[in-house]
Length: 593
Image (tube, rainbow, N blue to C red; front, top):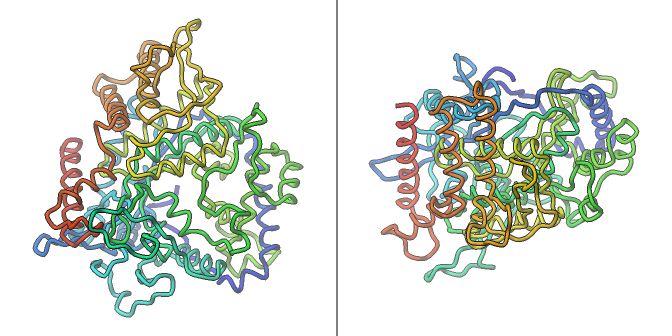
């Protein structure tokens, strides 16, 4: 990892300059990918390290006027992090009101490491607060409720807004996009390639006094309504490329389940929406496909196109995702498996947007990130397989679909749960794979309003073996279950011998580990913390602890200014943000004192 706050500020070409060289640039990127594969294909590690990435919005509460304002302080945060002695990694994100944090060193997989995640996230929030030069605060909210409305106000570095431009959206000035060249070039080149502004029509929640608008939809013209929202990601190292492919597949199926469990985005551009999550919105606002490509190739931000592991049945090994055949054949010749070659060849259906003048020189040596790195870094399946950058790193998988939660405890609980799921799946060689089309269907269902209670998802039950004590296995066939049944088990059914929910299954593994290795099983307080994470997951799945989306909807419906018209006022927005701050302050006081 680099020093906190560092990121390249290269000068990237515009799409009109890139387009004539698209094929040659991809040829160069392919050579770089094959070189990276040859360098890393035999890499091995203990496969026990992992980390998280938390994204924040910077918001100032004006208590006198009861307003919440987006604070454009990304540059200040990064400059202060670069100049100071920070304990954590700080990176830019898409908009000037955003920042991203990660632990400087990865976590291990022992109980003490897992227990420490809450403290790590709390200290990062505290450090981010110290990097600000205003009295704004960092919030782990997905999307600011009034973004793109006339009521939306800004503070912080607002000099760039004195003469705003509206090329990408009629609702949000271009100047809100981060000044880092990566983001400005991505936005402008994607829009130029597509040939028109990014636009999403999101279904509006219809209340008794909601005024019908065309299509009863919220118009989200502009890329910022997608990547301008915050998420929570987990990256896990694996033992080798084979295990990386296997764990990629298991996490693909978990993705929609965790998206529904963490749903926190019920408000877009000042309206209550009839969805609770942001993933599909990001996919559409980040979509650079032309009209001819629609329905033929996937957008850059999408569900995983195929499984990568071995021993797939014909039902599961039938991906129809497009791939460049020439690229795929060259990758297979380099030693990649058929599925892995297909996975990476799929990237080459997209253009490379981050191109410098030096990249057009065929003989120029790579200086900084390669073209392949820039291409793979702008294609986002919901679970990403990441090639090691050197011979000492392991193969990694990045789990992307979760929505960021209000408090650090909630974010820690979700991140640790994903890690424990991965450990359990690897230990018992569990196979959760279902038809990839069902994964895509489940991602769509995860956006449903109150999906935790209204939807059922495809899932292969976990069972305890009656012949091998402590051994777990999965059913061969999937069935449709609620989140409560998936996470907590089908407690009212007596005809399912050995069936167990994910939370009790993981608790069983923790207990077995504690008995087998008392030296690394952690102290009682540390073990209680990990079980508290699991308690949260149990209660969220059962409905005892509502999703962030449900909490926000309830705040709106109970607010004295709400007119049952689906609209969010300044006062409603202020009270939502203030309520979240109160939750965060209580959480911080509990963990940091």
